[in-house]
Image: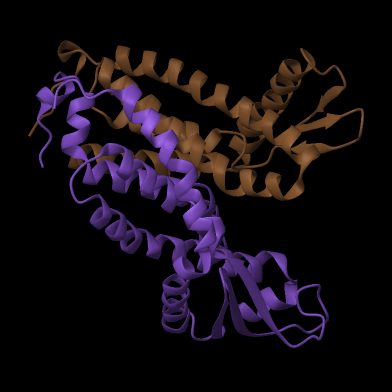
Length: 166
Length: 202
């Protein structure tokens, strides 16, 4: 457990530090965020055609209301936490890879729901938007990461878990 | 330990989360008071050269600096010393999340764990508040204010990292880590007896 936590904390710090570099921002974070806005717009268009995505901005063509997806709302940090937790946990690489693929999809899936819900919440009530944006959704996304990790740990068969020396 | 229901646990978390958020929000000034005192102590001990006082109004904590606003800014229209208002709630929403997780786990001494969690997490909130204060005087208010603070390039990088880490990672990860550490036996149940075969050291 101690080794897992140390590994988790180190990996998380390294990945987070890497995320903040200009190179990662330009080639990974911004395209990721733009994609999130585009996917959110595609989902919304199923029931509300008057929505457009431009870069990291999701905008209503009807009333002009827009949300810009910024750091902390693009799910990158939540994904970093999940990656660090899965990589640090004693399991085979095959299991880790499978867990990461499914886990990242799950975390980003909820993040799309966050963006869409905030987009409509903001059009309805600014105070409710601020409360949900600043407090509630942040906690829900991390709870999602925790639950995905618990589910993954639960699926690990004895044979898949790499031996822990010491 | 075997057979702990993840579905039941998630459902209980969902049930506990709304009241936990309600209590945390309504009692925000109460929860923020010790954090304000801690921030005051850290500011006076660690940053005495640029901080002259810390004031608290509910969950808003204002750090009054010794830095002069040489021209009027939106934060200091009179052009006096720079003071930075910080929202303690912005960095403490992990408390209701932690409370919901602890209560949903239905383990012994839940209230004690919640109180211990508050004591353990309060310094992380203080970290985030101080990091935001340093970030704002260094990057946001005015170049003349940043110049008075006198931080070098490496220190500016460290402040930027501390702020980002304090804003984006610590508020949610610290409570999650605390919960995992205080519920290791409960978590063994989630491992279905297989990951638990690892027998992590207690």
